[in-house]
Length: 57
Image (cartoon, rainbow, N blue to C red):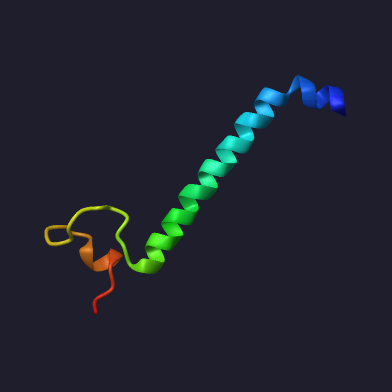
């Protein structure tokens, strides 16, 4: 088992980094969604999809 880990350490490190990045992105997206922030980053005044991505208050 130790031999397998030592032979694949680079792959393991890259996978751990990728998992951490994906988890961070998902966390930020969930926080922004809970705060009511838009994911598109633009104003909704001229957007044809503004009625479907934001609820009317």
